[in-house]
Length: 218
Image (cartoon, rainbow, N blue to C red; front, side, top):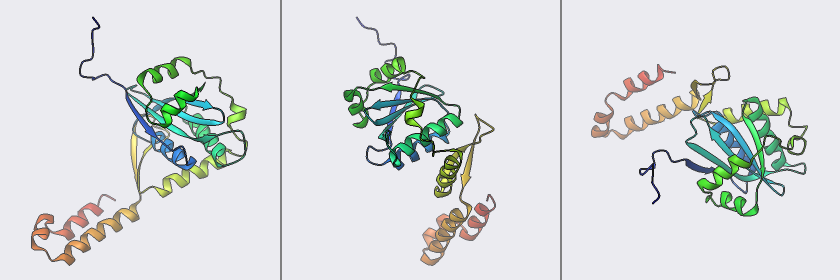
């Protein structure tokens, strides 16, 4: 008889899939959202099949695993290899442990099809090593200035993102585009006033007071 020590699945690993097999930028964006998110990434495994790469991200509390699908490549000069290089540089900068595993096509297909199992996760953890091929995966032109521009572009293009303060590894701050947020609030305010719907106005109370109150936080 097999005993089930976790009948409710309380200690199950939550496996999520992000990125895209067709667009490197989606892989970069989703990695950066996780990098600057509320959960700290502890280690990243580069899963390599031919010249394609997927990622497995593990987090501090160990109850979440995120796979980034294989929109990353290497072996030539192009956007795919630049994306791979950028992610590695960002991970290095954040102090994330970087590993690599030569993945079988069947495992790669399960990851790209959002069908990897907990056994796959355990296999990757057990067999990956920190001796990844740095020279092959990191292009020289993806330097500190390139990384800086990528970070600035990512933060600038997001209305609201969670940013981990670089000098406070366990504290999260919220970065908000003030102009866009206030414009959105003003549009809501104007729509309520223009509607002249007494019920709507009643629900909102004094819309002008609400807008002024919210602006005070910015």
